[in-house]
Length: 272
Image 1 (tube, rainbow, N blue to C red):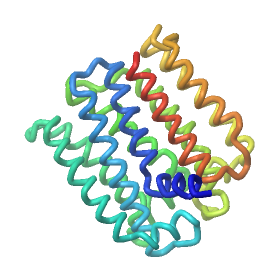
Image 2: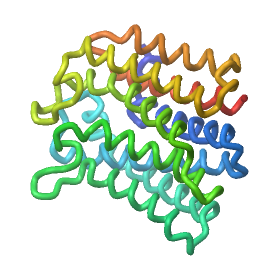
Image 3: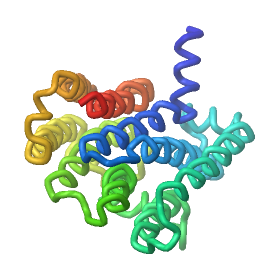
Image 4: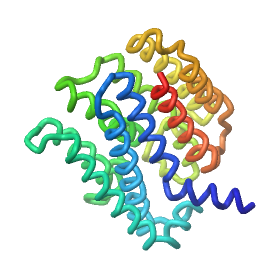
């Protein structure tokens, strides 16, 4: 019981998703053969930790019905301090990997930041999360910019290949769908998430299909790297978790196992 409670606190504090974002970013940078890959990974981890926790701090203003948000409400001061420190750390790393006069690189970061802020912040009673069909794409777009497009653009001056962008985007949509299935009992009908439109079972099939498509695009982008044992094992782990997904996945399954699997994939990329 103590171990489970500790694991839930780590999940609720967004430690796992932050570490996984960092590993996935650093791993992609390794595949792209970027020099400052580890720094981009650290930036991604710190930024994810800060943004995700600040988003939930904002959510508890209006909502506190989930166990996760109830925990956040009870620990607001600690979460705010850690989020602020992490945000400062992310900005420090950022100014060490990006040139201050590189307007296009800053535009990428500012764009992803704006999407992250208005994902929860309401204007006229609406935020990005509440716009029909947009919720999952907003998450995937933000991650795509931070973990893939931004590092590649800063070091190479060009966008990554279409196939590598397609790999990351399809992969992110696939691993985000389980969270929409989890949130079926909380999301309003107007959100029009994939599970709301087609049901949990078909949403799972879509997630599995998109994952397989993402692996195909990975092969187009990186060829024989797909046959590297740690990468194959990491992809197999994600595939298994998606296949075993039930109609009411828990926070432990989604934010623990599936988010953790993203980090395992990143680790596989790093070892390549």
